[in-house]
Image (cartoon, rainbow, N blue to C red; front, top):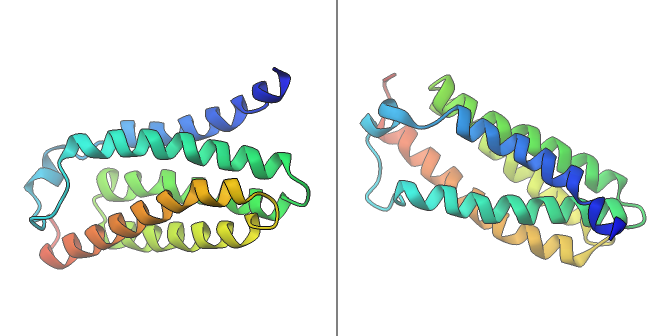
Length: 153
């Protein structure tokens, strides 16, 4: 049971990151932007991120529990910082281009986490693969929105 209790700080850290998405909501400004026809419905984002955040927390916990997971855990923490910053940049600051730069930083830290976590926990790696796919899609959506809205809104 105490082993599972050690997961709680990881869930708390990810919950804190998720809170940035709750503080900086899309709102009317985002709804007014030109978006591609393949933009997912708003309700899908919350559901997808809920599942991903649980997986992110467990992946961080697994590398923390493993031997020689310090570098992977440091990258995991850096990724959380970039993750939290994206909502603030996109919806709080309305800086689509800076949000895209942040999305690329998230992708870089996800890939680096995959590489560093592989010798520590392949389960952690597999838990991060859907996150890589979703952030890749989100970065492409961010890029497309930037292209469709070249002037400040």
